[in-house]
Length: 111
Image (cartoon, rainbow, N blue to C red; front, top):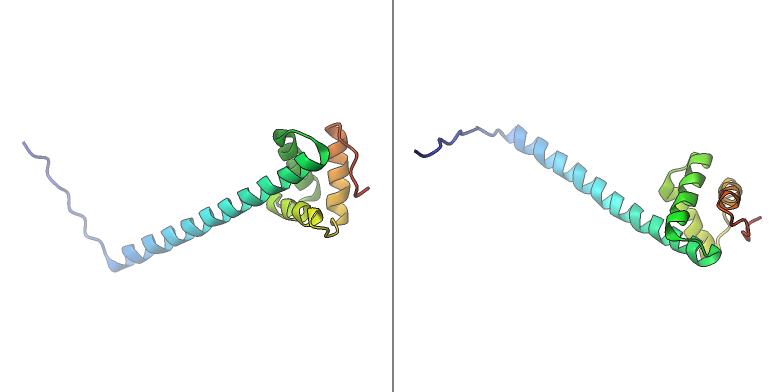
């Protein structure tokens, strides 16, 4: 016995809604990939400058994000900018120094 196929009629509106949903999901995924790369680069800065493990670098970035009320990728962008000789925003620098001190690595050049 063959299973019966259930046919569903698809309207143009359904197709438009699905297309819009997929485009929004695609944009979110692209942003997530970009943010992930930025955070990884900032962790690399912390690893290189402070000789901490990548996991500890992520913890430090997360703490700075929480204490400054900035998105993680925004903090990461500031760290990358600092590594490229841009000034570190004062609240980020202060929170970073405190987070590094809590992790046992308080030797930041932004103090």
